[in-house]
Image (cartoon, rainbow, N blue to C red):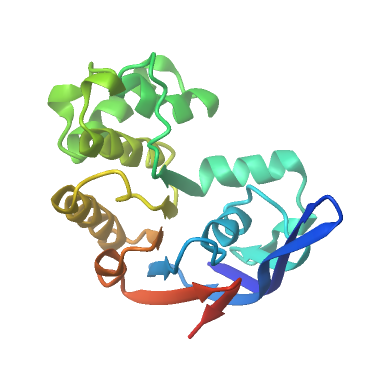
Length: 220
């Protein structure tokens, strides 16, 4: 489902070049549950940005469903992010002026889905993560774990086949973190491909496959 070939990303800071990825080869199959682990600065988030169509490599290739994404226009990349990939972030990234129901429905709004269908879908998704009783609360009225569950529901709005979670348990306690992983495991059992980036060894151990990064390289 996702494949990278000799992926290189170098950032320039003035005249200094900072290598973030140094020739990463990675294959993730449909239905995999993969943890990408490693210390800060190892290249995890940079790799995530590449396979999420959020950034472009300096060199190398990224394939999603067999398509070389370097050949796609910005609009085509945006369609992949909207339709094929659901994102879950460490900082939740919820809109604080919207309640949980409106936050979950937001991707459907951008997909052109009508309000009635949008709200029905959002209610179902919040019920699936156990938050049907909190759907009219704004993020400031929710705990960290509840906000992350809203974020997971939002990631599922357009029914993507891939869920990419960047440190999804980083801002919650250990028990809540494992509860979030329970939800991700359930989504994987439904057939979704799950990619979790983490520096937490316990969280990584729950994935079906583990890839460790160091100094911009994937270590097997």
